[in-house]
Image (cartoon, rainbow, N blue to C red; front, side):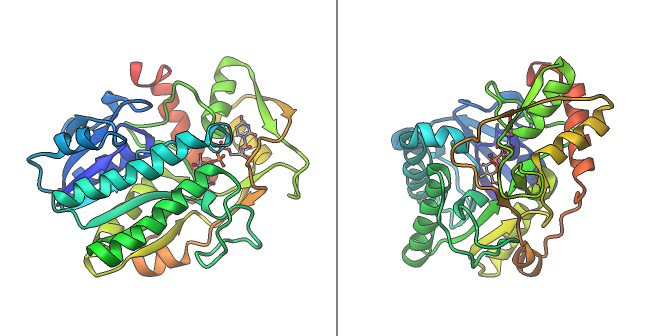
Length: 325
Ligand code: UFG
């Protein structure tokens, strides 16, 4: 299939490209390189530099391409930032997705996989969280992804799109060749590894949450398992499936537990200091991925936090300056 991958120069999108190419698909990456890296795009993939907020630019970028499917990774995706700059999230995520649906639709695409998020749920009533749980985002980031899901539902009804929204829990880890490299890093796992290398301290955002050790609990899922789910979603849409699916391991780890595992992997102590809560953070997010297992036939291969952190550490050591070498 000819697949347009937006955000294919980013962390999760680039690993999905690797996987799609291995499966024999024809991949076209569209990315504005605002946070991604040209070097992260596999050489066998096509590449166009365009900003999804600029519909005319998207039309020009897609001219001459006949598309079957879209995988939409490109987005602003930071919970904390979305509390400070909500407009960025609604423009970058919601508005841009409408441009994408219209222009990719005009090129023939009728299958859409969305990178969605556990942040659509907000503070859950119970864990593990199933797709039936109420959606009440506690931040504009989660709200923006929920809005895109609603838009996809209408394009499904009115424009004959099949769509699958994959609600990722906490993406982590690396493939052999691709990993996490951001100019402004805010994610726990890469920051902990950086603290281990540079000798700094990791700030723990709040230790007074209603969790066993007071720090936030998250469900960490390997990016290669996420990539696998995308391939399965394509197949499922071919069978007529549309809808929302959680992707997580079903196990929660607190911030302090992540630091402890990282200390074991790296083999040295990592400094910690308790800082105030980060606005918008729910206390606990743990997935039930039963629906993805049953309908998509998805089974995560890297269920152990230690092996996830080890893969991130391997990539970090091989690329101490990220894609710059
Ligand atoms: N944390 C710290 N110190 C840090 C960084 C993070 O204590 O320096 C804590 C956060 O407060 C949070 C946990 O570590 O409790 C994980 O934080 P991340 O920033 O790594 O990830 P988030 O849970 O905020 O968000 C991630 C993705 C979102 C997605 C969400 C779903 O970035 O896109 O997972 O669970 F929506």
